[in-house]
Amino acid sequence: MSKGLFITFEGPDGSGKTTQIQELKKYLEKSGFNAIITREPGGTPIGEKIRQIILDKNNQEMDYVTEALLYAASRAQHVSQVIKPALEQGRMVICDRFMDSSIVYQGYGRKLGDSVRIMNEIAVRDCLPDVTFLLKLNPGIGKARIEEGEQDRLELEKMEYHNEVYRGYIELSKQYPERIICIDAGRSIEEIRIEICKHMDSLLVSNSKR
Ligand code: TYD
Image (spheres, helix red, strand yellow):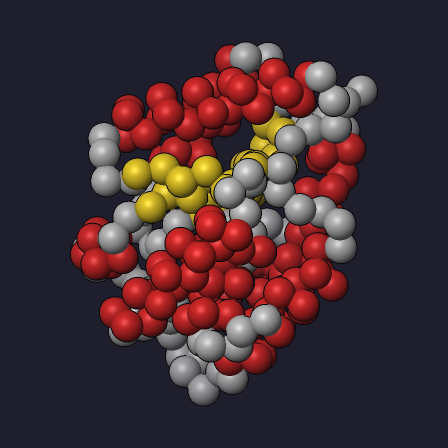
C-alpha cells in the first residue's frame, strides 16, 4: 500500500483555512481517498490540554521559550500518535497548521529565530509535510475578520506581531518553493477551492507514481 500524503495548511489568523480544509477533505473522499483532518496545537488528548495552556488569555506571563516548547511538545505527540500512523495506513492527513506556524509565530513573531526550527526538528523527526497550502492574506484583513469573534492569547497580539508573522510566511515560501504553494486568500471561497483542488490533482498523479 502506498503511503498517504501529508498536507498542511498555513496562513495568518482569519485567512479561511478551516473552510478550505473541509472542502479539500470532501474532494479527496469523492476521489476515493480516506482523509483525516487534524489541527495544531492539539490533535491528541495531551495536545488539547497543552492547547488550553498556550491559548489561555490568563497566561500573560508565559515566557516565549516556554510557549515555543509547548507547541513543539504538542506536535511531538501529534506526530507519533496521529499523523505517522495514519500516513502508514495509506490515509491522507490534512493538518491545520504545523511546524511552519512555529517557525513564523515563534521564530519571527517572538524573535526566537533558528532555535525554533531546531526544537521542531526534534519534535517531528522525519515527518515533514509533502505539500503546504499557504493562504496569503494581508494580516490586517485577517485580524479584522476574527475581531468579530472571541480572540485567544495569540490573536490578541499587536498588529506589529502579525505583520512580522506574515513576513516570516513570505520568506518561508521563498525558501521552500517546491513544497509551499501560495494561494491568494483574498478571493471567493469557491475560487480558492478550485485552485487548491487543481494543485491537489497534480500531486495525486505524482504520488501514484511513487
Ligand atoms: P487556532 O486557534 O487554531 O487559530 P487559527 O484558526 O487561526 O489557526 O490557532 C491558534 C493560534 O496559535 C494561532 O494564532 C496561531 C498560533 N500558533 C503558533 O503561534 N505556533 C504554532 O506552532 C501553532 C501551531 C499555532
